[in-house]
Length: 349
Ligand code: KG4
Ligand code: ZN
Image (cartoon, rainbow, N blue to C red):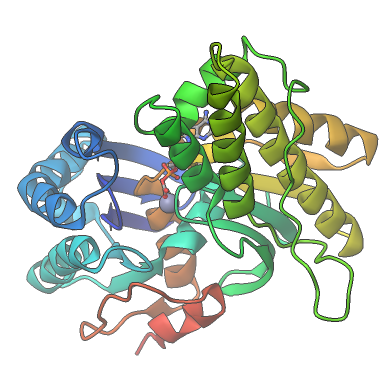
């Protein structure tokens, strides 16, 4: 059994957790949403400063909640890519310093690999291969999970991430930030068939459409045009119907692609992750389609879907059990493909 203290500071949550392989001993998530709300989105400089102010307290809380001392920790991990550089640096530097001070192995973790591992926290018997649908504020990807560190990205968004589309549509309707939860709630009072919106197909050079890639920027523009037209026509904009139609379009688009991908690659399980996994429209749509096609869909609890450090610790524990550690010279990267994960590790000497 491997006990890892993990840190996640890639965006706007300062998170620290202690995990014992797939078991969560403690998980602290300090959200910065109130600090960014007044700007209508995440401000990188504000995020870095907030991480700096919170990180030491969060580490102390994680140890206290788990009732563990440093002697019981086998390794220290932190997200090193992708994400906001200044934000990542705070967590990575803290982890490297602790690893040096306490003389423990150190591991850098890819944020998306963490999101994939989140499913293991609630599904202790799950093993690859399976399909991972990651839908967050920064990412929308369909990933073929082959083994620890071995991934193939089968589909992704060509422009906006799913959560980003929710946030942008909420902003144009002046519904506040983050937009996903507000839209989800409001959509329940609206008619999802009220307006026909474009699903965002991605054309292939030789004709036809990409089976797995998505594009949400056209959908966002279509919502803008629709609202402008409704305003021009006079009368009140039926906001609930607009967001219900938008949400349904996103849900159908993601469901169609995830199911096609699972069937094409002969994968019987789809594990969902990221903040948009909370969306009731997506859950309903995907669940219904999965039943029809005899597939299994796993929706981990929301606390593991949104950014947290337990998922980072879980990934690190698996890498460590295979003898992987990272050099203390490892830096942060704002972008890093999931296929490059193994570059973060060296064999244990
Ligand atoms: O995974 P996450 O917490 O952070 C990252 O982006 O990594 O995801 C945040 C995103 C935001 O864009 C937020 O609007 C969206 O997830 N979100 C939702 C819902 N709850 C959060 N989107 C749709 N429906 C929801 N219920
Ligand atoms: Zn994330």
